[in-house]
Length: 283
Ligand SMILES: Nc1ncnc2c1ncn2[C@@H]1O[C@H](COP(=O)(O)OP(=O)(O)O)[C@@H](O)[C@H]1O
Ligand SMILES: [Mg+2]
Image (cartoon, rainbow, N blue to C red; front, top):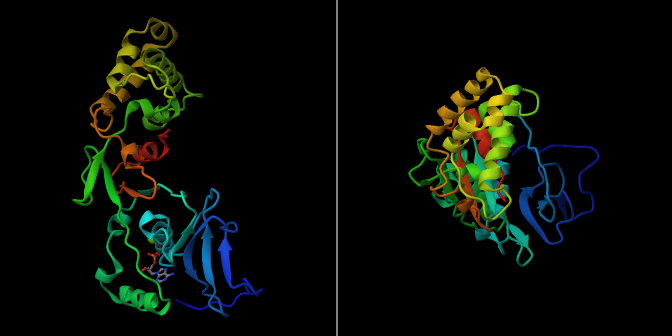
């Protein structure tokens, strides 16, 4: 890696640098400082929540850095030289991978090919680090083509969608547009009939249940024009043919386990579905 000269020098007098906090309970090793001067270790604090953007030119190491963080967060490397975690401090790692890049995250460095891998192996020995394996699971949405034979299908349970999620998926604004307001009313009605998302007694429902409310609810017929109702019905009908919304299939929440890396390979998933997958909140 290139060596940079910055003023004022970073971390003067410190033995190592921790980003984002002091990492008293848990932190993960990012690497070493590239700047001129002593080769200080750089750590990432994991005590609190962080929202991090990694920016840089193409090839500057954004994806690499994400991979390093994943490595440190996975349980396999807990207690290793790559991270320090207090007892009981385990993260469920979820990667929404829109480029299907992380499908190779389980490939050990010892098996990787090419000059970069060779350099990394040398550095590993030079820094006296032991490689730590990652044992991820891979997931693809039911009905889409898997990016790797290792991946398992997952579905979305409609119960996990809120009005905003449906709006996003059908491309309507639930506050500002009549079609969106209608969708919001349909959602409120399905909650009345099947229970709210937060309650444990919620009965599963399907996209067809939403369509049937749309057709039969008398208040909806009275409040909205036939064109608005038709607009939403057409969009919901298209969705009901997608196998993705299925309460009987394994739910994507099965992928979330403390200390475990779940990679959602979304490279071949259409844009609107991707954002729903990322937004549909798990509780
Ligand atoms: N800190 C680093 N140490 C060693 N190799 C790195 C580092 N950062 C990036 N690389 C290597 O440089 C290449 C480009 O990095 P990459 O993460 O794909 O860049 P970006 O995602 O920013 O386009 C990759 O082969 C990667 O392994
Ligand atoms: Mg990249």
